[in-house]
Image (cartoon, rainbow, N blue to C red; front, side):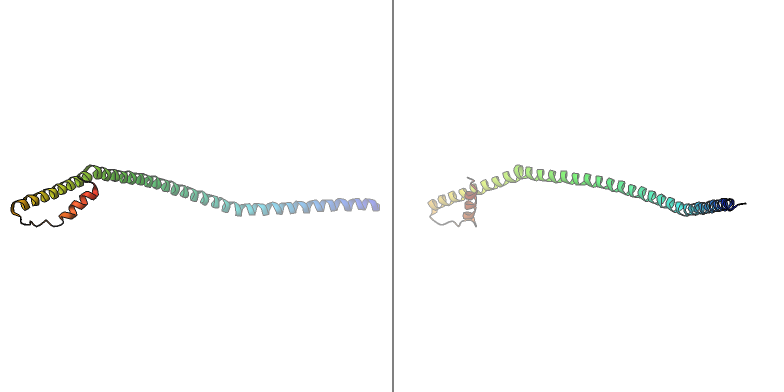
Length: 150
C-alpha cells in the first residue's frame, strides 16, 4: 500500500471518528434540552396556572367593586333626590305657610297698634288722663313699616 492509500484510510478513520463524536455531542445536547424542558416546563406551567387563578380572583374582585360602586351610585342618586325633595318642601313651606303666617302676624300687630292708638285717643278725649302704652308698641309699628306691611 502506498502512502496515498494510507492517507485515505487515515482520512476515512478520522471522518468516522469525527462523525461519532458529533453524534455523541448532539446526543448530549438532546439529553440536556430534555432535562431543561422537564425541569422548566412544569414550573412555567405552574406559574401560568397560578397567574390564571390570580386573574380570575382579580376579575371577581373587580366585579364586586363594580357592583358596590353601582349600589353606591344608586344610593347617591337616592340621597340627591331626597335632598331635592326636602329643599322643595322647605321652599313650599316657606312660600305657602311661613310667609303668609308672618304677613298675617304683621297685619295683626299693625292692626293692634292702630287699635291701641285709637283707644288712647278716645280715652284721652273722654277723661284726659294718660293711658300707659303697651311694651314695645312703637317697635311693632316700626317693624311693620319697615317690612312695608300696612
